[in-house]
Length: 504
Image (tube, rainbow, N blue to C red):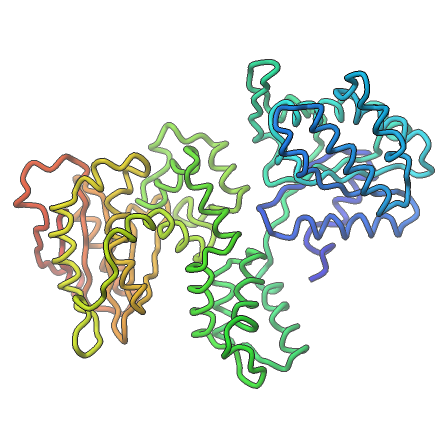
């Protein structure tokens, strides 16, 4: 796909023409860097501007050491100016700028002196801005702000700051000032904030069509639908899923054979089980408190408005990271692959401690003995309830996570678990596919109307799956006082569906 078509080029050109300083942010690995490099090349081929792209991630290791941070940024400007613009001016001047402790104005001084001799106005693209830490980031933002009124003759005509988040979401602790500085106050000259989104459904399909044209290998219609469904257009996932299918999986390397949905299903599982770098970075975010508060709310299906510790900025932070999106019912995980990665990551340690021998729950005919799975879990929970009651993170979702850890072994024995959950749903739905059978579960936290609502919700879920029976599991929020009632099972009917209620 053309990188310049990933954003509104006309809008960006208008902002540049108006001498604006603005933000372009996007989740990691969505093509932001590729698009910015393409924009630099496009502007440099024109007659009006000189454009320089720099990536300042190397300054991250400086942490609070402003001198080291400024030195890294100046070196990056010098290297990139020499490569992209064939201009050695920055390289000749950075040493003198860092002498005599002038590093807190070094970037301001370099850009001022450089722009004053350039024959065209300079457009500066600074990528990975939010990788900087503390006073190093504050110093950069304030130096840019200090030169703002000198543009365009003596400072960059336009500056584009690129990162994962909008600058308004920055909460920067200044060791020097012993206080929190917000991005908005340190950089109050921002004209606009643009967000680079994922691929559209048409763009996702176009990539597969290009593969078909170049190799002759076809994707079935169901395979194309599966790519869009699993990724929701997240660029890294689209590319990784298709590459896994067409190049990593042996059956996909034969160009005479079409890529099928079943192959896409397997490729999705392969990516998740290997914990590819992108997915591993995603899972690492789950330990952050403000991330955990929202993800837990989504997992258990609660309405996030009921959790006062969740702030609007926290929601926007997760949206900017690409972790969640606003769905029909409320906040939901951004795509089905992330929907699988998140609970699996949260239950990984617990799952590994449960043992993986599949023999006891698989019948002689190779089918799943679901009743034995449930009975064994009830017995296990009674013996190890502290795995729920003593969990220190994701406490509200502890029941859900332990139960899913128990079921996850079924997946590792050849089955598939599909999960549906979102804030506001009031439940988590699971569908287990094993051999040629499907088993539907609905997980709910106990409340006055948990049974009444749960039975109706599960009946609707069973309708969508074309199943006649399912299991409603209701988890108690309270400390257990009567262990005889734990694991109680009762059969009920709802809308002609056979439902077994399990109280845990």
